[in-house]
Length: 603
Image 1 (cartoon, rainbow, N blue to C red):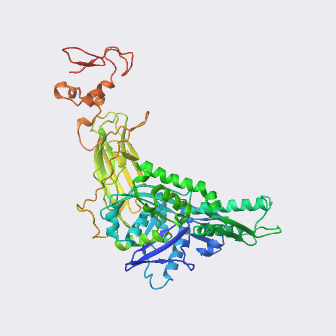
Image 2: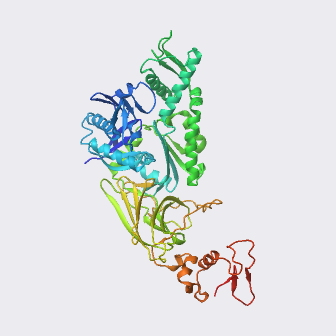
Image 3: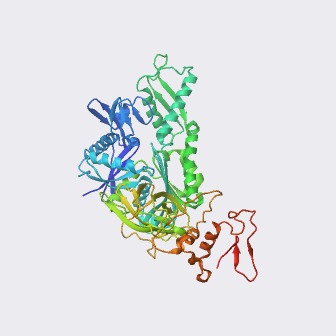
């Protein structure tokens, strides 16, 4: 059964399918992606471009009986559309049904449409993914797999090229992919490894989408026209006039990608004035001044992503720009300044590439995999992988589960702490001293009077088809438990068999040497107190001494770190002052005798 690719966008949606070695896009009557807009008129539902043309005002959200970009409401219980309470899942389902109907009415090329690989923004939380899956189910379309939009775009771009050549050229090199569309700016920093590509870090925002640009342009033009024609702020406009102007501003933004000047004209715009029409000559230079602050804001997100990942602009071997905003000359010019023209790729199919990439992923049955180890920090700063890099992610209806049996090494505060983290770099061959990113902390109550290793713990790890990792920790004596979800994970995709390009066949990431991160002054950290084995060397020295003082017999060569821990937390045996009190001068080394630290002699 054919699996389709579905790009359910904030402002536009599109389905694609692979037939032979080409993709087929199911566009609307104007041969454009379908607007994600729904209009409710009594029992009638109007969806797509006709609904968009009925908008009476600009901006995303609910406008009277029209909902523009219902995806932004997923995760909420309800929204009010002209006073009527509606479930966002049902509104999204109306858009999905319309896209399906458009595809099915496009001829025999569509075939049976019942399953799809669906793309999502990188910052879409798990609760919204669940709601999106439910919406697709209501519309009669099953989601086989979710894939982040920039990752789908890169997959599609590579599949259109000479795939082995592209993989050889960029093997183990950094690639920045961004999708700057009407609703969001999505960023992914990734790296091809042999026959697969993995994400290193993601970022996304809805603050600088193309619709925000359009509204900013419109407000600027209206303000200038009012000033030029000496119209006060209260000058009325005809119903739907601003919607028509918003559409003209969007078209002007697109036209100015290839022209120096355009006329923005709307007849019957102002009401009760001598000249009702709206007419403005907009130049490319003026456009760039209008949207300059928004461009700065978007490029700041790109800069922060690179800084957070520990890389410089010069280390990016390829920048792939998709989405309608990437066609703006100002965007391309700034990309060329940052990365150089030879390293910037703006595909011709920016508006359709994400859906096409999803279709190729479906056709190739490309396996989505975990890009990085998900680890549990153990006592003494060792790391236990609880989901290994390369683990295949669940598809529709599947769940990956594992259980880990652990011990509490230091229960004195009555809490066992499960600190879950991930390395900064992808792959499974990660050293203990490499930087980690904190993901979540799960805590459960334990018996504060128990000795080390007496408190047994369990950790269940589940990854479901919505790409949500759930950590469920339990203490077996106190019988306390807690659950936490982790949504911001990174993934990888494997290309079709036969595209392996490295001689060794090893797909473990080998990145540039990363400098160990040094904690800032005054920084706090959690002292991990769980372990996966009964090993006294993992117990803090001051706690171990309370119930096993013989462990510190010098003749048994106790670990120096535990000796220092034991002595550090004890008051001076001579003067009784606290550790590191400058008034204490009792520490000394007596010739021919045991070392005395803080007035305490150890045997």
